Image 1 (cartoon, rainbow, N blue to C red):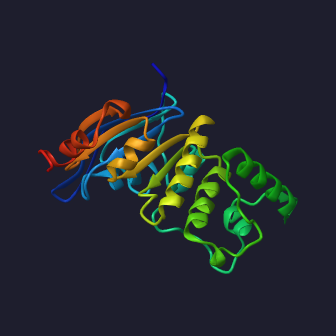
Image 2 (cartoon, rainbow, N blue to C red):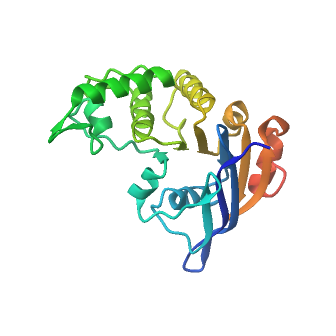
Length: 243
């Protein structure tokens, strides 16, 4: 059995009387693509907000590489190797790709920013991950698929080992989706662990290794993707046969 890179055990989070996550267990193997699926309101986003320390669980534990992990804030989660790529890209308009990626994490030489060292590191990350980014181009001038790549490279630049992709295909063309999937496969092959948050079942079956299904804040299924099909996943998501 492969070692678990990430474990979330008995995670509970309530908003008033609503249990957004109700005793959720999540087990993610290192170097795999793990899809977390469910309808809107299933608890996917809340669970990932807890992992990235945007929200704090009411109870439950997080383990990374078998060791308990407790984050003070989102920056602390980043320091623990958690990187989240949101649906809404967070970029500084009017700045280059390079400046967007290194913002707040610049390599310094004394009191000065060492742009040459930053560029060298970014070029190496892009080469290792199969991305081709125009580092000197303004982000304002990039198509959506490249903007998404900027966000992924940004978390890699911050040394993310666990990369959360929140509905990443919702803004992409079919060609952009295939490019994203190639990048995901390349990252997983280099021992990065990918958490894919989505409700698109065809895409889940095309890219995921493992699947956790959520419904109303509870886990309704844990599956190996190669042993699943759309009808089974849909049934687990909604609790009944889907015609």
